[in-house]
Image (tube, rainbow, N blue to C red; front, side, top):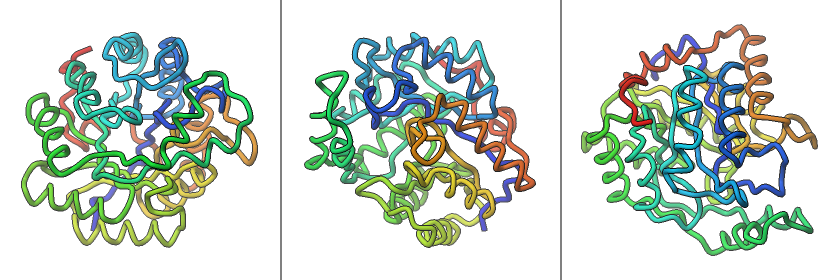
Length: 312
């Protein structure tokens, strides 16, 4: 069985590399928006802030470390949340691209997709007739013929560069049951050590579907593979975000919300900010009788190196 999680960790993924500016005016793309929304999400109860960077000129995802440095020091100064920097970045970035920022920034945590996968965003393009920027529609449509690449060699390299050399810990993103077995293989090779943090992800086209039976299957598989060595959390895309969060809490897990994963706060209603989603999921957690974890709790539970050791 997984180790008992007495408190629920709320992660908030601020912007990601999936949604585009046309889809919501609340999607943070500028350093000011990212800093303000990140601090507000932390104050609302997010213990971990999962971050990507955007080019403020047109909102496209960017691996440029300068874009991260335009807002990460402000997050560090404005809140105590653990900063979790992506190694996924955005579509069509190479592993070298994706390592540029985290290698320079040396954060406490990084995300790590536990395998290569079809990553289909192209159905989103059918929902909009006009676009704010000319890159958006081709970016989405190109994913009909796109594979996000993270081979075993890529994963080992990322773990070595960021984990061994810079002391980062990881949010191990598992989009399907095979990714759990990939993680077990990495554990067998002693490339990571417990306790590690597993993010079970549902509803991305190309990964496992958003069915509650799949959540149970993924959790049971992780329990069988990892025993008491791991902590776990759930994110589900789009309208499945809050129902899956509630189910995760009832099963003893943690939750991830944020505008990377869903732009909505209710049926047909766009969220006004990341903090609004954090506030809603915190209300659910506390209504179910659970307590949220603080950043200090997360640092202790995951054995993080501490904010004084980061590079920003």
